[in-house]
Length: 446
Image 1 (cartoon, rainbow, N blue to C red):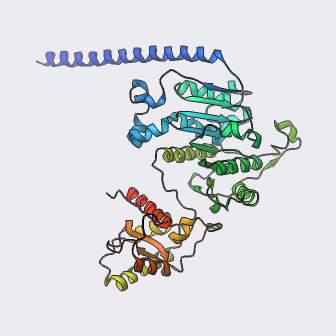
Image 2 (image 1 turned 45 degrees about the horizontal axis):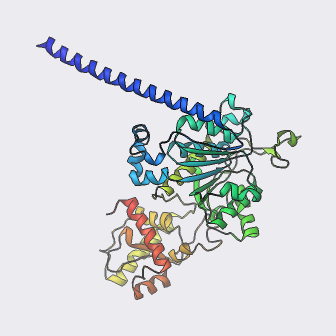
Image 3 (image 1 turned 90 degrees about the vertical axis):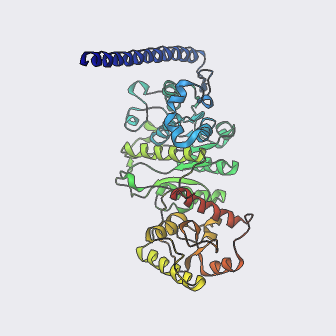
């Protein structure tokens, strides 16, 4: 009997090994065919700006292609099929392909972005290997755009990759931002070109994420994603904000990824900057860089862009600082208001952590009316005064639950409760509904 069981078990193991071997052989032959296709395609053309055309299968066909379906299994499980399809049909432009840009582009590709336009005028250097996403010593001297394109083609040959060896200028705007991209990532470290790119994106109505300085920093817990109106702690973003406001009348509406950490080391000035410059006046000093930080900036940027494109944006950790006493005051005011307006506190269904989340994460420590309007200068500084604010029911017929509380001034709250919930056509009401829906999503409410 034992011999029979052992024979059956041995047969099952042998069958499993045989199946595994056949699958391995199939994959090896499949990859060999694709490599041969890739080598043939690469020989056809390599201009300064070139598009890598992979196999006839498109990324949007991932549901019907066996290998693509498996490659993006985890993405589909996370975003759902429609979310991943949005990503596969998306067109993203990445300008600046150093530490931040190369890592962001790398993860955008691995996550299935259908079309990438990679823009940079610079070349891979030996000193950049400590922070570049994919470059090797063999790539030193190659344009950064071409380097990424070559490596990307090995990772996902179905993606449409356009490599542009150029610096962003106003004259090149139509070439670099043309084609109606769905998102633009600014990973430029020069203020002049950065300002021009952001102004152009704002003028064209293109969603853009701008990376502030990742050099001279080491603390990954200090990364934040915020509107440029809030960015006063980072020197680069502060300078960019000033130039955008002064030269282009742009005060807000541009998202920035930055670090709240103060630089740990100083810029290193060089005696003969022309020896390090590809473009005159572009590089006048060396920023010491711990390679992990640009990588984390790039990963965070890619995560933000992917979630936006999938239609599932996240709510970034706010920059503002609110004290424990302010939260306790908000709880007291809520209870007092419930007692006065509704005859008791039995309808209050939130605790301290809920109030902290609402005041800080959802309403950013300001009235929903002011936050929805994105008033210039509203977000300057870290500390936020909540002296004249109160959490009030949005729908008077519902209890004071986490998805029914809005931060307003006392006068705004009284006016709202006396007039009832606003029409859905009202801009402020639409904004409030959007924020409360975010609460429901993060709390997994119905």
